Image 1 (cartoon, one colour):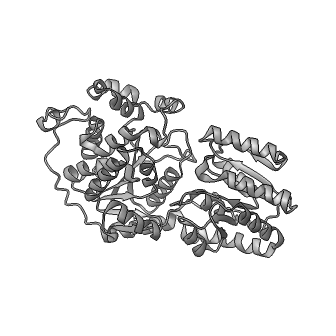
Image 2: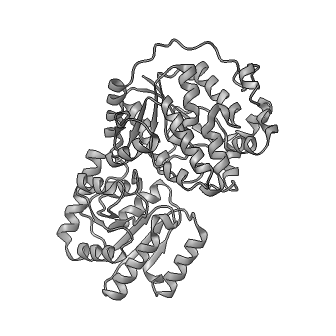
Length: 453
C-alpha cells in the first residue's frame, strides 16, 4: 500500500499528536509499507534527526494567514507563495505567530474546514496537484479532523479511501465563539461524509465522536495510540535518593498543574512528608504560570519545586527517569495521554484522574493509580501510599513498562493499522477522474472555480 499521511506541523512546539504520527510512520516503514508524510502549516518537530519520507510543506502557515486576511494573497504567483513557504521562514515566524487561542481563530478555522469554498482554496489546488502528479496514494490518512476540509476534493478527484485520525480536536471547536462554533461543527459533519474510516484511540471516545460527527459507530475503528518504547526503557527497580513527582505537559489551567502544587503543599505541610516536584513543559499561559510561582513562594514550597523548561528528547528521558512517580492532573478528558505513556515506558507508576483514556489505560496496564478529577487531597494520599509501600511502587513500575510495550507501542499500533487498512478499506481502482483544471502552482481557468473568487 502507498499511504500518504497528511500531518499538521506544530513548528517549534512539542506536539503529542505529531510525536504519535512520526512514531507510527516509522513503524509502518519498518513493515515495508510505502509511506509519505505531507506536512501542513509548518515543519514537523521530531525527537530525532533520522530521515523521514517527507514532502515540502503545503498550506504554509504564513500563506494561510495572509490569504485569510486579504483577497490579494489569494491570487499571488507561485514565486511569492514559495517565498513564504520556506521552512526556515516558517520556523522563525512561528515565534511571533498570531494567537492560537481558539476564541480568536473562528473565521480561519471555518475557512480551512470549508476547503474549496474557503479562502485557502489556492493551497488546496496545490496539494491536490501534488497528490495526483507525484504522490499517487492508494490511501490518504488525515491526522486530525480539523484537516477534513481537504477530504471532499481528494475523494472526488483521486477516488481513494480516506482515513481520519481523531485526536481531540472537538475541544478546540467547542472553544470557538459563536457563530463560528456551530458553523465549524456543521462543516465538520459535512466533511465526514467524504471520509471512509475514522480511527479513535479508545472506545469511549469513539462512541462520543460517532454522535459528534453524525456518523455510524461502525465507521470508527479503535486503535490505541502508540510510542516508540525503545528509547525509554530503563530499570524499574532503580533506587531514588529523593522521592520526585514528575509533571511533563503544557503549563496551562487545563492541564491542572495548580492541583498538583496544592497536593504538594498538603504532602509537605499537612502530612509532614518529603517530596520534590519537578516540572517540565512549555508555558502556554504566562499569567497562570506567574500565579503558580506566587503560590509556590507564598506557601514556602520553593525548595521543593524545580522547573526545567521545555525539554528535548534526551533531556525528557533523563527527566522522566529521575522521577519516582508521574502525575498529570489534567482537567480535560485526554484522548491519547502521550506524556503519561512516555513516563510509564520508563518504568514510572502514574497518578492520573479517572477521565478520558486514563481508566482504560490503567485497567489494561495496571501501571498506575486513579484519582477523582480536581482532587489534590486524593493525589497526596496516593503519593503517601507509594512512599509507604515500596512493594506496591515496584509492582506498578514493572506493570507500567510492560503494559505500555504490550498495548501502547508504535509497533502494536502499526500492526493494527495495517490489518485495519487491509480488511476495512476497498483497494483503489486507479481510475482517476479527468485531470484537474489547475497546475502545481494552484492557477486555474476553470469557470466553476473562478466564479467563486
